Image 1 (cartoon, one colour):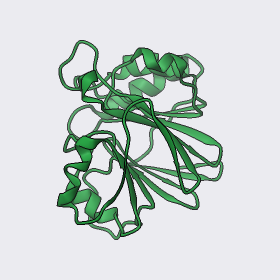
Image 2 (image 1 turned 90 degrees about the vertical axis):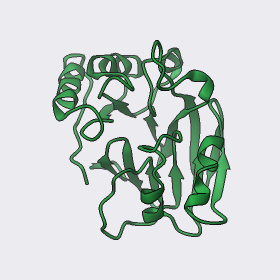
Image 3 (image 1 turned 180 degrees about the horizontal axis):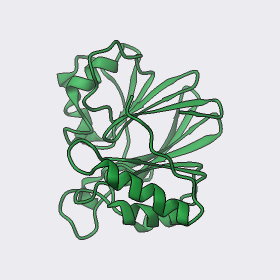
Length: 215
């Protein structure tokens, strides 16, 4: 998908590729065996295997790649190779890498045990070409979202481990993006029907939402 000067690709599950002059990946998982463009920056939300996939990181990493992640992810990256360039962050932090500004947002469940707040797992707000993109990570609708306004939001819709489609619509209503994109479906949990339900729910609120076909 082209959005202003950006190319945004859904890689399946919670994985995305964002391109301008830089190649940015978020949580690549179950990538096919094509020759993937190598990452300038890789953002990883947390250490669960479907977000920090060693096999898939190997497909997109190069010597100069900078990996933005929490300390739980850093402990797994030794399986990728030696001397991985990492920038270790936690919730509520911000930084800049080669002109790409980012901040971190807590990602957690409310009333579920899968993603506890005290784990320190994250979503990311990434600003590329003056466009702010919020990848929530594995999260429910959380109070921290009340202060977030971004142009694009990437929201999980599969339920159980994250918010479901209806809850994701509520998150979009809070964040008020110009474009909402569903994720975290079609692999481990959640279906295209969940994504369609989310898109239809957003449209009823006047929020543009779009399903991206898997690249």
